[in-house]
Length: 458
Image 1: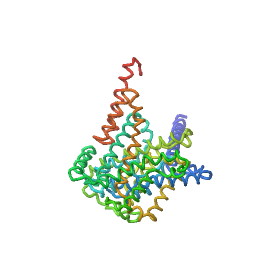
Image 2 (image 1 turned 90 degrees about the vertical axis):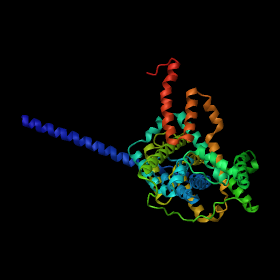
Image 3 (image 1 turned 135 degrees about the vertical axis):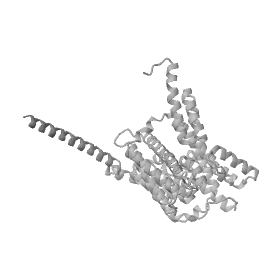
Image 4 (image 1 turned 180 degrees about the horizontal axis):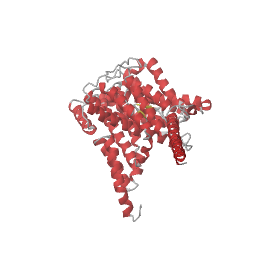
């Protein structure tokens, strides 16, 4: 009887262990399926595909000058920016966790890439993009997507403001048609670039193109108040500004640097070697790129759901899948000679305002850019680089949102202090340090705020 009882007990324990293993395996398989595309992603396509295609073309028009400009700003060239927008935008649209996200090269990413390219050259972009992409995919597989909700909103607002300032500073060499002074500190290099340009004589033609482009960019949207121009005002202001600036340069034979002819290829050759990039530098830089790609993509996806008024959990963005998709997009972009990419708040917001309902819009955006590369190369060659710099300066102003910023600074002293501190740290130290220090300071000072008010937080 005792032997039989022990035998039954062993069988019972084995059944429990087997059941537990099956549950774990089932949960793992379910999670893997959640990271991959499914038919559910396209349930609304039958009713929305026409609007999605129009939205995708609109986003493509907006993305074109931004992709060119970010490629030039980074130092990788306009072609690299376009290739990144095409491949990263297409892969992230299919594998990402958001129905509205549009991905590609962004200003935030250039903040990290500019000093890297200045120090190690463009050959560093491919290995860094691959390593960072794998890290972001790993973050998705290990379910790190929910961590973005832990970052306080004043830190995120300061993060955004700091990025806007750095983007504007990075445009000084192109806007002034001047020598780019290498350096890791954007504020210092911006000042040195400005001083060098003044000492050696300002390139007034380029400065004039910058001013003209900015005027068009900010005045053109006001046409929507006039019924005669209402249809024309649907065309993005940045696209119109670049088109008119290019026309002025061509007609009046203004001497200013142009983009020049693109190769018209969808693949750029890149070196498989690390070059001067050490293993320690590879690890450090790839971690920074991966963290930024994760943070900006999740932030953009979260904002997208808010803008689209998504309240149904079934249609809400999936943070872990978003990380997996963005990591895969970075791997794909790096393999074809592109740059690291993230979800782009500016292009995503345009996508939603254009009434996109599904991923077809982001996919169409990538397809539109393919057509541009195939058919509009001669036109792009005559675009002045100063006009692209002006577009990014205008974009940085839009990102900063001065009116919204004034409202934020009138909230609590802690929130205002954290916002300004984080923005300053972005400019002085870098994006990742800014988020870490800003979050730490906010969490340390927050209990003091409640204590001073006599409120218990226990």
